[in-house]
Length: 308
Ligand code: NAP
Image (cartoon, rainbow, N blue to C red; front, side, top):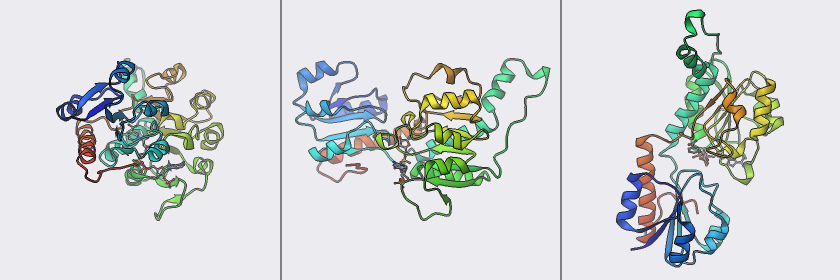
């Protein structure tokens, strides 16, 4: 049996088929021990979307052939290094697109209609003392999508149905009817909701900074379902405290699972624990892709969803 290094906690419905077909080594709790004993045997790594794979780790695995990401984002994998070494990389695109897009819409609704605040209001017994303050409608507002890829386009389709205008920014104009903005700042300036849906990694690190938040403005809301690294979190805290933007809906954070105290304390921020793809149906489908990509690789067949 081939040997795999597991670099993230994985659900049972993924662990079971992996353990049935491979010798699996726990790299989460005993990485150094596994490397000391088995480094020369490891042919595959299984990791999650947020897992960081240092280049130095790859250098310690001479028999490594494939890295299979249980997630679509692979910003923690040094893909250029993998390509140079001829290592294959796979991820789990498409099967999670609908769930993540649904979650983005939920965050748009939760922030615009102040739903989390309204729920806390009822639970706190404040309703008998008077009605909940008025919120804001979606109709006629503009959603600016930063990264009109699989998830970004699914968000755009959903929000168009809710009556929003759609604009987007990416590295290139696409053959779509939505308004293209050639810079992120320009997109923020036309947006009521700036929705981050691009990949993480060096190219987008802290792209949503002071200037972008200032352009979004006091009527604007930031939604992030992509990666915490794309937003300058300190700048976001300052913008919220100063009223420079109205609200934020966040599924991802710079240092997960740590969430800055200032965000926890702000009633205008909706906070979710990175649950964009966290449904039974989707996680099972993602697990299936991990298993099938590994089986294809070790069976000498084409990969289903290769990144490299
Ligand atoms: P995708 O199809 O590759 O779309 C990414 C989009 O971002 C592309 O349209 C690309 O357009 C744009 N982009 C890439 N690099 C850019 C850059 N440097 N500047 C501006 N735009 C850039 O990926 P996806 O499947 O939609 O997933 C998007 C991201 O969502 C993933 O990478 C992942 O980090 C995140 N995600 C989060 C969760 C969650 O649980 N919250 C779940 C799944 C995914 P151009 O090529 O035109 O620039």
